[in-house]
Structures are given as C-alpha cells and as structure tokens.
View 1: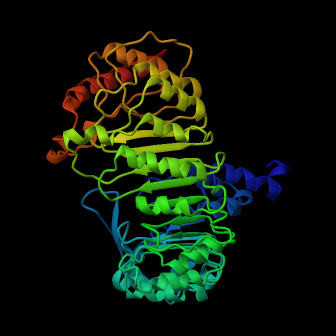
View 2 (view 1 turned 45 degrees about the horizontal axis):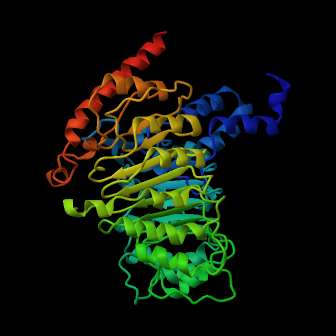
View 3 (view 1 turned 180 degrees about the vertical axis):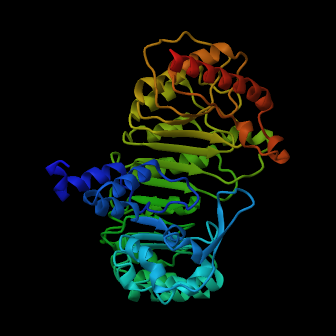
Length: 520
C-alpha cells in the first residue's frame, strides 16, 4: 500500500468524497429508500483495509435508521415480517429470545459511530425489541449521538428516553400527546445544547400555554424551530436571538411585538409559513432594511388565492429580502373549487413574477396555483437570463392554463441561460413549430412536465424538444396526476386529455431518439 494512504489527513477526504455531506439539518433518510451507491463503495472500502475502515465506518453509520442498527444483532435473535405491499419492505422486527451480552458485540461496535438516529414504526416497527434492549442502552453506547428523529407513538414513545442526553442538538418528534408534552417540557434542561427542534403543538390554541413555548423560551442557542403555533412571548424571544436561522409555522401569533430598537430576526435564513396574512404581517413588521432569507415558502392549506393576492405578497416580500441571499421561493395553495367565470382572476400574472427577477442566485422557484401562470416568451427569456443557477423551475396548476401565450421557442432560453436546470414544469403553446436555432442544448434536464400544453402534431414537437433537451426521455402532463378524481377532472381545461394522448406519443419518440444516440 502506498505510504500516502497511511496519513489519516489524506484518507479521511478520500472516504468523505464517496459520501457527499448532507444539507444543513437534512440528515434523515428513509428506511425504505434503496441503499445509496456511495454507501456501497464505502462498505467495500471499509472491508478492504484497516487503513480505511475507521474513516469509512464513521461515515457509513453517521446517520442511520434504528432498524438498520438492529440488524447488527445475530439473525437467530429476531424475526422479520414483511409488508403485503412489497416483499422487500420490512413491516416489523420481533425478538425470538432474550438477548445475551455476546449478542450485542457488533451493535455496540457500530453504535459508537452514530451521530443521527431515527426510528419510525411506519418504516419498520421494532418496538417489540425495545424491552430487550433497554438494559443495554445508555449514553456510553452512543457517545457521539447528536440528533434523534422519533416517530413511535403511544406507549412506545417513551423509549426515546433511552437516547436522550445532554449532547443532543437536533430533535424531531411527531407525537402530539401528554407523553410528548412531558418530554418537551424538560428538553431545555436535559438538552441545553439543542439547536434544532421539530415538534407538534397542533392541539394548542392561541390562548392556552404550550410546553413547546416554555421549552423554546428556555433555549438560548436554538437555531431552527418547526412547529405549528407560537405565542407572542416565544415569537419575540426567537426574533431577538442573533443565531436563529430557521422558522416553520402554520401562522404567526395574532399580535406581534411592536417595532423597537432590537433587531428583528437578524439572521433568519429560512421561513416557511402556511397562512397568507402571517406572511404579509411578517414582512410588514420587519423593522430593518432586509432579511437575509435563503428560503421562503408559503404553502397554504386554504383554498385558491387570486392573482391579486399573489401580486400583493410578492410586492411586499421582494423588497424585504436581500437580493443575493434568496435561493428558494415556493408558493402553493390547497385544493378548491374553481368556477369557469372566475378562472381569469386566478391566473398569476407575468408582472408578478418579474418582481423575483433581481434574485440572481435562485436555485428553486415553484408556484402551485389554480389556473397557472400567464407567461410569454419575453418573460421566460428574462427569467432564464436572470436565474443562471436555477435547478428546479415549476409553474404548476390544478386545472391547467387556458390559451398560454408562451411558445415552443421559449424552451431554447433555458438551454441558453440555465445550465443547471434539471426539473421544469411549464405550460406553452406547442401547436406551432418554430425553426430551431440548433446552437443551445441542455443535457441535464431529466424531469419535464408540460401540464396541459396545447399540441396538435407529435413528430415535429418531439424533434424540437429532443434537439433542445437531448437527455430527456419522459414528459409528464396534468392528466398524469388526476388519479381518477372525477371532481378534479370536471374543472380541467377542456382539451387536457386530448393533449395528454399526444404528449405520451412525444414521450415515446423522445425515448427512441435517446436510444439512437446511445447506439451511435
């Protein structure tokens, strides 16, 4: 073996390169997801030599589901049952016999590396194993544990106590019960270093005290909070913390603290709300020049918002966000009934979207509305030119956009100006085929959704799209997601299913073009 590989400072980056670091706080993976190819490479590396094993194992076991850790027990100690929906998905894990000290050898070895642990009964119910494991569980078995995501409910919820320690900095719990409230009420004392908290207080009214509020007010280092409701005092506490970065709520307190000389959320990077009035009051309350927001989302559960409401939001929010900071802007509304006569009032205007053009570092822009967005080729070109870092651009609708003004030619703007674009949802008129310039191509686009875009011919459209997006092999339509919902279908633009048939033929043609390119 080369002498350089005996230097830990060189071996560690090699192993890290095989498993890219996750985004901030995004450390949870589903137990049902297929094993990441990078993890397979790391596992091989760990078995290759002791030079690599310690570094590779540290990365392999950094963030794991509890069920995967329990697989380290000898197979004769447990029984697995599988779901009826998929023979590879584990339904539950139950003990065959009592555990002995020798059974825990491998589990104890790998638990030393675990930093983030999650457990959900819906993924794989291992609650029957808890009683056998409880005598063994202690802080010493998880010396590096920093984060817990716990989805067990009812009587099994209390087993989370076996993993709580003063070192915990990240905690996510989905249970909303007296047991969960009792845990949350003690978290500020038991986990004084907590920086990320996600928990529920949905059953709490604005007028009733919540253990979550008391807990948060006791946390001086908290950086992120995901919950449903806050009272005024707790909201004010968070707004004054210089290190607080992420807030996710259904709605803001009814009365906000008045402006004063103290900074108002000076470092807030992520804001997620589900209430239009709350979003408006937040930006109007901002008493300094601008927020350093990197992510803003308003995904309302209420019925449709009119174009005027969307324009009002963007007019108030855009000037209050630092241009260079914003990377994700998401707006969505819940499902509702839309009368034909009211459809024009719900089409988002191009002039509204133009308020986002100054944010040149955007990577995600997503709008979900009742009747889509009124785009034209000029606006699309300006968006593409203004957002060179865009990766995901979605203009979705529930019922489709009538008579779109954008044309097939507008797709070339994305190939020319957006080299990082991988997902695109947009409505355009594909009934006329413009001559392709042929000089701009976007290889990386893999997800393309055309909603209910008008189309009359297949081959010319497929050839044009194949030239602009040569790596594309699939096309999604609005009809794809209806799921036989008759009430939904009644409100679609009349030709949606006719267009769907033609777009599926375009998809088949794109697949053939891709196969020919591979052969040649």
